[in-house]
Image (cartoon, rainbow, N blue to C red):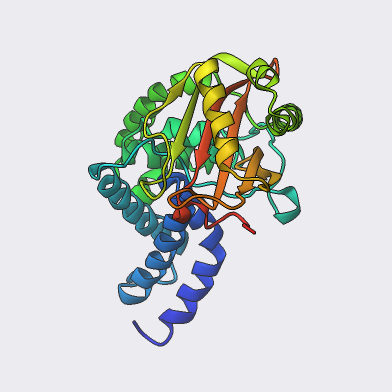
Length: 311
């Protein structure tokens, strides 16, 4: 690296840092992994800079970041995960620069807020790493086919075929798609408030009344804490599970409702607890148009909670 190369790389990296992080987070679904991958991208840029630093460094940095993210994702999928895998939550308040959902006015199908929701990130798990990269660049970051090909070092025909296959795998998500509009945020918040009130009062009937038929609950502790390692299905089973969770939380849990991954979620700090149980949790609840809960996703693993403010 020459003396003139470092300043150009510093400027390019700062300009594209947020884009690289957003891309790596959606590629991996884990904020801590995105932090590591962005840092590694910069290390690679310093140790092996491009020949022409006067060219568009954005595409070059994107290529490095995506290649690292694809390798990371492939390695993760080769490892057995202890129980259900869930995305790592991130807080998305408007006050910190996260805009409210807006329908895309350009070629991309999904905006930044929708593309970090749990529903979207879980749907991405059905895609191969390359399909994931193409879909994100084309549908979220609004890259043209030629720019996507350049960023991923693919031919344009390969980009088009990969994009088509990725769209097909996202068909189920698109049919049930519910972007995080203000209306959905308000409905979700009201349901969470009612749910918390019923749970605190110990009113099992009111708790189960808020649960939709076909409900399932998933818990991701990464094997770090005691937690159900299989999905809990059905209103009655989930209702019992949630009441048991409330008992284990102790007498004085602290619970906040915050915007997390585009929608209100519960950020919980448990009171005095038994050994082997988590100190914190972020709990997402998917809420339908009738205000009933049809999915409960609890993230307990410590590493996955690094991007959430905890007590």
